[in-house]
Image 1 (cartoon, rainbow, N blue to C red):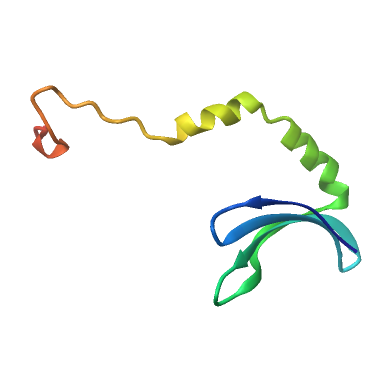
Image 2: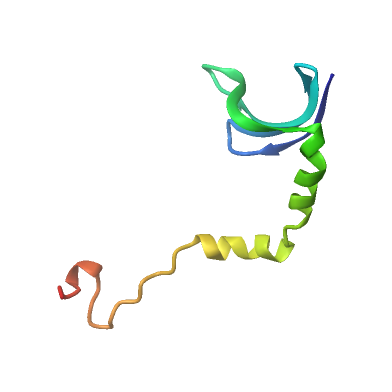
Length: 97
């Protein structure tokens, strides 16, 4: 049994695929990278599998994420620009202590 749930674009050549499947007699949610290129088209080894007994806990964890935290993540990821004294144009000109 395989049932595709959805796809997220990662970049020009890769997508993240969410799929319900039955692997080795064990049902679970598989989240894997799918690549389309001249050399190879198909799933990579990158991914994770959440078994059915663990899915409710996984869903609970995902649902506990505050959407406001996701909005602020762009600001948190960018390092703040270092402010230089007005008389210095580059970090190279900073005095050694």
